[in-house]
Length: 155
Image 1 (tube, rainbow, N blue to C red):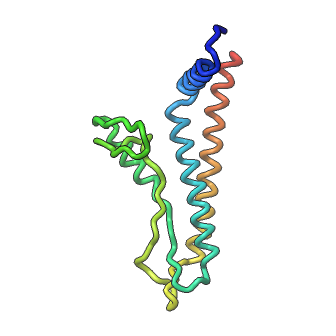
Image 2 (cartoon, rainbow, N blue to C red):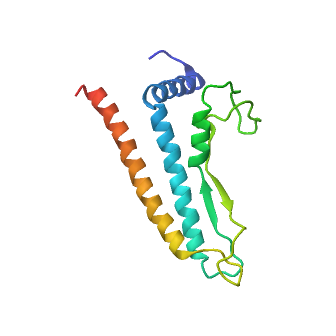
Image 3 (cartoon, rainbow, N blue to C red):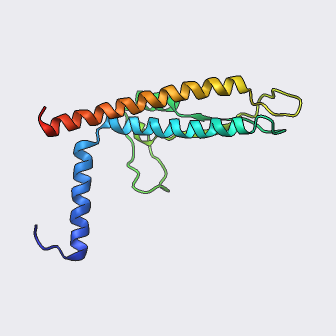
């Protein structure tokens, strides 16, 4: 390897890492990663809801992600500005890569007289559904890694 000096070596290593990421991390893998992140966040939100089932005035929260992802994937053909910093203002369409899970508080209903709107049966069903979704996404991501492993090993 050529002599890059200490600073140059850092840029060289970063360049190699970016190259490997671009070659190995596919769009599918990126979307699966986003799905896993959303599912993990949803699990935390459901756990918070269940922990506060008896807290007077507590309002349940939920995670919105899949619908926003569907909308963004339906608009993939338009133009969009590239965000190079987290504080930049998005220009044009929202791409699937820019969709992030959002936690929203449900203020519209109350299950009891104390103002709490957490329904334990609904939360437990959501927890079971989320667990199945997380497992499915993790298995699919594992399958993507297995494809890469097979390509590297030549089998």
